[in-house]
Amino acid sequence: MGIAGRDMDTTTDVYPYLAFVMLFKLVIFVFEAFLDFRQYAKFKDMQVPADIRGFVKEKVFKDSQAYNKDMKKFSIIKSFVDFVWEMASLYFLLLAFIWEYEAGIAYIGLDPTNEIYKAFFTFFCLYMISTVMSIPWSLYSNFVIKQKHGFNTMTLKLFITDLIKSSILVVILMAIVIPLIVKIIEWGGEHFYLYLFTFVVIFTFIMMWIVPNFIMPLFNKYEDVEEGDLKKKIYALADKLNFPLKKLFVVDHSQRSNHSNAYFFGFGSNKRIVLFDNLLKHLETDEIVAVVGHELGHWSMYHNLLNMIISFSSLFVTFYVFSFVIERDDILIDFGFTKHYNLVALLVFMEIYSPVDYIQNLIRTFITRIFEFQADRFANDLGYKKELMKGLIRLHIKNKANLNPDPLYATYHFSHPELVERLRALGDFHDIITSEELDKWEEEVKAKEEKEKVEKDKATKEEEQSLLKEGEGESEEPTEKLKED
Ligand SMILES: [Zn+2]
Image (tube, rainbow, N blue to C red; front, side, top):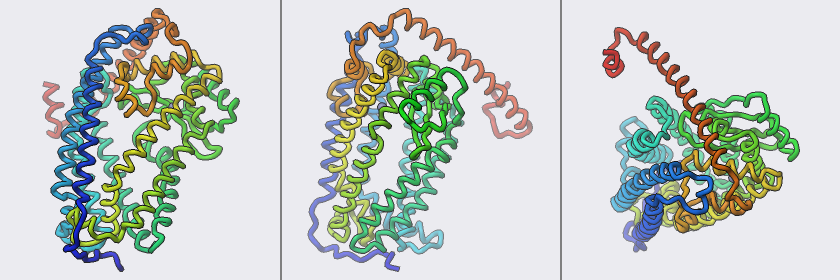
């Protein structure tokens, strides 16, 4: 098997590829930090902007600003730390270090020169490093910042089980994908990029079937939407548009966050729509139907298909360009490698190619925003203009979305246009919701939330009680015992 690495002539002259990658990352970091600080300054502003004054009360605005300000500050610090880590790992050639650290693989009795084992070992180490490093950040953002702003609905237990489940899934996925990629490049010869591309396309379609049907249910509970007005209206809308709606689910997303959303999935004539439980809690029936109308707009105008065509085309170009440099040793040498492996060539190539990726992502963001306007227009043409406007307003308020975006920041980052832009595109929005209507809504939502909280507390108490009973005589849970004392 030609799977072991090939020696390289390390005396060849090399261009400073690594330095170029680092310089590029530095420039992007500085630019994004500049945008972050602009947005941060906007979050400090406590005056409700004139455009939204009609439907966003001062208190609501201030709460949302305070939450977003804390989150932004946190993300600025996090991006700085991440940046330092990324630069350090590039500078100290971390990738080459792990890849060429053969003792780890030899220790468990496997051939340390085998590309598949090496790749698996490297990806596993990188994944573990990034996961472990991300834990304190997620804990802080969920259990300190979001908690403080009444936005965290996650329990520590759920956080840990999520982490374990997703880690297992990632490892399984790596164990399937890595050997296939290594073999395909090896077998493919000169035209390996064609085979690799075909593999990724097929794999994507398989995952599009597996993820919503088998993986997402591991994390959330999907239930049929109750019989009633909402279900009837959504099915009627689907009928009218010839959308082959087979199932309408509600997902218990509120156990993780307070954000609301809706989406559809499925192939051909087997489509499903999923509504987040928060959507049902926060919006009125016709507004939910309007949001579904927006989603069906994406379907009707082939937005998902277009997105997929764009992704696949750019992927094909990436692999094709890679086929020209796969055998180049100088790039690998500059990144600290002493032997040539195809997969390493791919990893290093992705680094050098990152400016192209970056530009493609920017273009994608712009295209997505255009799609959002089109989907809004679609719902508008269905006759849901007012409902969509109200729904959008309520979603932005309840999601504590950015209500005071910096224009440059929004242009660069937002995949969805900002609220005011979307409303403006739909028509006159200033008197769309009366303040009485908002007050009434706030009370209703509050009542619903309180009722739910009481039920949830009762459920956790019962669970704790039963756990305590089971755990009697064992000293495993000192905190629980303390609580009892
Ligand atoms: Zn959309």
